[in-house]
Image (cartoon, rainbow, N blue to C red):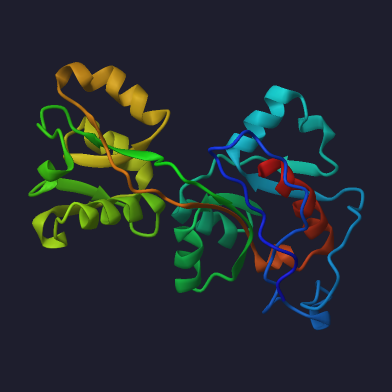
Length: 257
């Protein structure tokens, strides 16, 4: 069942707290035989004492700390794991180390393809590019047309990979006209510094830090108009079968949005 509508906010607008019900597809969740929250149950309203979540959403933690609101959460955050890359989040879900995480739209697709049962509970839309194509120092790349024949870092199953593929398509560059180097996004910076790749998509603040160090040696940040359009908040189905955790997630969504 789909409960209420997706929680949405546009990043280009002023910060918005969206007062909306948890949007979660519960179809496929366990029913009464396991004692979990059934697919046709009403969403729980009350958070029992002692309810805790492990939340891998670093930006929200920083915002809550900066505003002093972190102590106002009506549940306990047992841990704020510094896990952000989609493949790492998937492994953390499998190991029961994370209850709730924020990623781009690709990791949930990757999770489903690898047999992990998880659900998206909220969505934010983005309408401006998040990534630039950082170039290795001395690579002599100034525009998208210069990508032909280059080594480009590609992270399958992550938003960065989608941005690269969309950029090549919009620039009219065939996949056989470049050399892909498959790496997790956490290794992009190191690969650029070591000149193992010519190009890798970087977001802020990593891009600025990289250019501050290597721009004098010819490193560049080449603009790409391609947008990784969605951010999602998602959780394993095993977490969504717990009524207490679902109630806590419902309270967290507006803060994340």
